[in-house]
Amino acid sequence: MSIDAPPAANEVRQQAARRRTFAIISHPDAGKTTLTEKFLLYGGALTAGAGSVKAKRDRRATATDWMELERRRGISVTSAVVQFGYRDRVLNLLDTPGHGDFSEDTYRVLSAVDAAVMVLDGAKGIEAQTRKLFEVCRNREIPIVTFINKWDRPARDPLELLDEIEDQLVLDPVPVTWPVGDGGRFSGLIDRRAGHFVRFTRTAGGTTAAGEEIVVSAQAETEEGTAWAEAQEAIELLDAAGAELDVKRFEAGELSPVFFGSALTNFGVRLLLDAIIDMAPAPAARLDADGDPRPVDAGFSAVVFKVQSNMDPAHRDRMAFLRVCSGRFERGMAITSGRTGKTLATKYAHTVVGRDRSTAEDAWPGDVIGLVNAADLRVGDAVHTAREPVRWTPVPAFAPSSFRLARCTDTSKAKQFRSGVRQLDSEGVVQVLRRPEGSESAPILAAVGPLQFDVAEHRLRHEFGAPVELAPAPWTAARRTDEASAAALGAMSGVTVAARDDGELLALFESPYWLARLQSDHPDLTLERLIGEG
Image: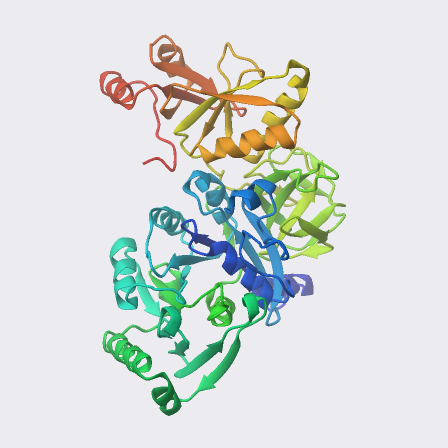
């Protein structure tokens, strides 16, 4: 860009450089949501009460797990968006569901971030869902910072954990901090960059920032004893092995900076948050559907990565979440939906923390805004100014492996049932399929995992007032097909052809063995695998 670029373009680039947009990924119960809360605490977005999801009676529940079902079960079942300031930077944090049944929602969120924090349980290391989410990040070339959590509890040998990251993820782990002690002996961290020891002190319930004391080596050797000697021995091994941070390799996804700590007690949270500011990339040019980079200082454009209804029970509204990709957003500006060509009003634009919201007057590349009642927007849609249209690569649907037949048990609530099913489909809570001879009164619900059906049933009953029965269905696998193949498949036993709302056809199979045989006997049929399978 020329040095004579308009001041407006310069301002966009400057604002983009201040942003960090990242997700937190983990296996369930590794401490992801707790870490999210503590980031908000250190960023000043929470002043007290940050704590566990299963909040005590006299404490607030987590800010990001706002859905009643999440609070009752103690797990995240939907992604959440929070924005907060830290060190003169603006951080957009996207908290993702940890459970594998919600991988599709996590994948959509990861399409909107520039970096990710991978949280590992210090006692368990790499777990199944960790590997799946890591592969999604790798496929999207998202740099990863690793946080080994729960170091205030009994944990595995830290060098063993590093070997596991390297072997299972084919990723070079480089410790930036190193723990002194573990479990009840965990007292602090050695910052390998600065060369000093940071000793922490606990606070009541972890509701305020942990006290930090910089301790010189001679004093630490005397006061920390065996734990200090063990940490120094490990660091000497790391130095001898050449474990040094290389930012370019990190941005290329070849290396992961590793931090140790305890989100529950706030030990190491500030050091990790500082690293996100210092290491995570700022928003940059995004590739459009043709593979061409769209600069951050181009005209306004954004991508819809999430749609959520009924976040506000008093108003029963619908919010589309947009990641700003280029230009400046100003509330009230006219923008266009790339899919429908319709002009969208932006009077009701918000920034969001869980269910709480505030009016967004403007937004810059990397920011996330919510548009209320933008009914025509769907996940993956591009929005832009009328003069500068853009198309993004579509966000694919995951391969469903669980199926249910949905039926409203109260015919007087049929309208609410149909409305609720359409809404859950547009949000991506479940995939809704219909057979050619079917109708809206008897759709097929398809999901990555059965917990999605629990969410769908809960929301249909409690948000839409539609009592529903979800009956078991015989199918176990799905493949994408076309109209020519659908005609032949529909005449075969053990196969059902159904359509998504967008017209895409899926062939549903009652047995993986029958699917394999058909593929072998009829190679001319179109039976394409979907993303996220196997």
